[in-house]
Each structure stands twice: as C-alpha cells, then as structure tokens.
Length: 488
Image (tube, rainbow, N blue to C red; front, side, top):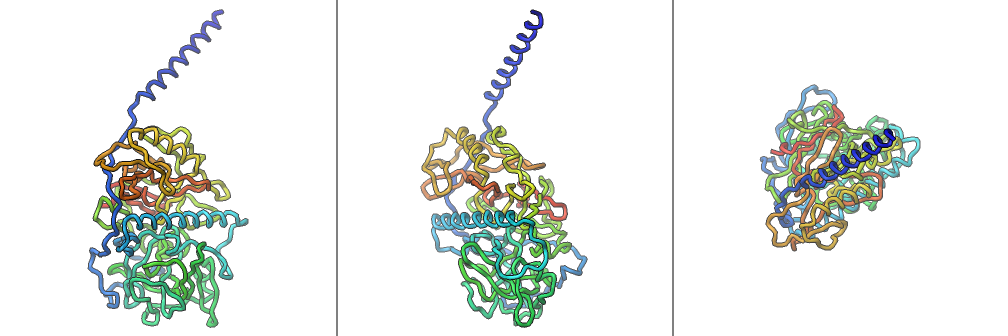
C-alpha cells in the first residue's frame, strides 16, 4: 500500500512539473522584430567608386605568379547585381527574371549533385575524355547574381566578370568568335595579350577539366555545358588577371570562341568554388586561401556590395561553422545546419537529421552565392513556415506568389512586427534581419516569406538570407564565417 502511495505521489508530481513547464513555455514572450516595408528596388546604376583605368589602357602593376610567389596579397573589389545590366526594365520585371534565373539555377544544382552521387565509384581526378559532362558554371541559369570588374591579359583589358561560389572554371569570351553573345565591353582578343599562353594536352591542368579535348596542335580545349542547352567552348589557357592595381599571373582559364545560349551582359565568369580549378584553389597561398563577400540589400542601402581576397577577408568577431566535404563532388560549400528558431523558440519538428548528408553524398546543406531564395528540404520548410504563420497572425494574408506560399498584404504599412528567425549552424547561430526573409514581390505592398520547400534532400542557403552579412570563406581552415558588422 505504501509503495502504491509513493508511486501515486511521484505520478502527480510529474504531472505538476509537466504542467508548470508547459505553462512557462506558453507564457514566454514570442520574440518579434521590426520590419520597415520598402518597395521593390529599381535597377541599380552601374558605377564604380574606385577609379579604374580604361579598358584598353596599360595598367602599371606588380606581376605576381600564384605558383611561385610567397608574397601574401589583400585585394578588395566592388560587386554589383546583374540587374544593373538591365537598367531599363521595371522593378516587377527584374524580380520576375530573378525568380526565373533562380528556378533554373537551383534545378541545375540538384541535377548536378544527383548525377555526381549516382556515379559509383566517384570519378577520380585525372584525364576525363570527351565533351560530355554537364557542369554548373557560367552565366546561364543565373549561376552568378553578382559581378565585378577586373583586368584580363597584358596590357590589362577591364571586363565585367560574374562571381560564383557554385562554379570552378574561370572563363571569358574571346575573339575570333564563332558565336559570341552580346557583352558590355569589347570581346577579349588573346593575340593582343603578351601573357596569354595555351595549355598542352598533356598538362595536369588540362587533365583536371571535367570536359576536355585537344586541337590539331595538341593544345587543350575546354567545354562547359548547361542543362538549358547553353555552352561555352574554346582554348584552355593561362592568363594574367588584374584586380585593381595587383596582377596575378598564370591563372588557368577558358578562352571561349563559341558561346551559345542564355548568356547575358558580362564577359565571363570567375569561379569561386572548392574545386581544383577555381580561382581560390589556383591562387592558393597568394591570398592564404581566404575570401569573403558582403551582399547589400539594394532596397535599404546605396553602398555597393564587395568582395575581399586575403587575410583581410576574415572579419573580427565572425561566427564560424566547419565546412563539410561531399565525397562525390568538390565544388560546393557544404555546412551543417542543426535547427531553426522562430520567435525565439527552436522549431521542434526540425531536427539535424533533416539536413544530414549521408556517406554517399545525398542530402546536406550548401551555401551558394548564385541562388537567391533559400530552399529547405520539405519537412523542415513546412515546420518552419507553420511556426512563422502562427507568429504572424497580426499580418493580413495575401495570395501566394510564384514559389512563395506565405505572403502578406502590407500596403499602407510603415512598420510591422514579425517573428524573429535564427538558423542554427554548428558553432554559429545566424540571426536574420527581417528584410532577409520577408521581401517585397510587387509594387502593391505584397511581401512574402522568402523561403521555399524542396522534395530534394539537398537544402540551399541563398543570397537573400546572406544579405548584410560578410560571409567569409577560410579554405585553409576549412570553415565559413558570418559577421553582421563585416560590411562596413
């Protein structure tokens, strides 16, 4: 009888403790932050704050060889959004085009990863014959939303180049053209560059390409193909790239004579991925394998976005999370996402297992500069969205818009309160400003929750969620950092 009495007391005590804890949880304030609704931004004016030599002028620079010099460099460049190349379009059209590029971009990433994971065993580094591989690299599919201006060749010709953390191969349009798309600057002519040099087929650089071939002179050819049918083809070569007044020699790049498809505006691409042929990997110790960018919210700031190479790329006070490696694909930057908080509370249905990459390279989370909208695996997205809707009942709902299924009518509002949102990476909790997840989608005051779900197991952290942070890539330390004050 005594034992039964003690068991009853224990049971009732447990019930009381549970009710107390539930009461505390329910009574804890739902964390909100202020959103100042701003309209869709117009196309930015294309201007460069730093004085730049003319595109046909000789730059007086120190020539630095990435393969032999021990000098460490630090370089800062301005970045501009690709909308600046479409200055006559309306804000609504620019946003629609951005979403179209975004859908193509994410779809191509998913296709590329799926094909890489399906390869068994993984493709080894070395000779890869034939032009059959599909690589995500370039200006199609919106694989770069931001571009900069840098010099190519000797003397340096300044060209607009898209930057992309989801690409490895560096390439530029070259004359003579079999087929070239329209670009803002004159086509680069390699015969007028004293530093241009072809790469022999037997070279390890040529064998490092995913898709390579040889011409009749046994010099290396490259080809980059895209899921939408776009392609760039030409000579694989080495050339000098000039960043403001600092030149880096013998950078392997594609000199494209046949570039067909949905390319626009810029002259080529500077690949910033993790693969062996990306610019950070090639320059190695020249910049201590460090770079960072800050992508500004164009609706809230007139400052240009920026890109930094070298030790100065790592801001003080940045929160770092380790980089993970996909055994089947070395281009993308994988990180470990552990959970998400909405309104100051961890969403209980979002566990680390939803974002885990398995031993075959399936799933996981990548950080990507070329994808705009963050895509989360569907169970995680649904749980986060439902939690956000629960905390945003004070806002007037609006119809769905494009890929967004949670939208609000904020017309006439100058300030609203919205639930806070935190992404919990291993070692780094990223508290997002409200403008990084509730964005304008039209000129009528409609704002949408800037995330989407995907049935694919791979989640992608896009550039809308990265706005205002300096995102630092420390490849030597195998980590990525975030600093909310690193854009100053």
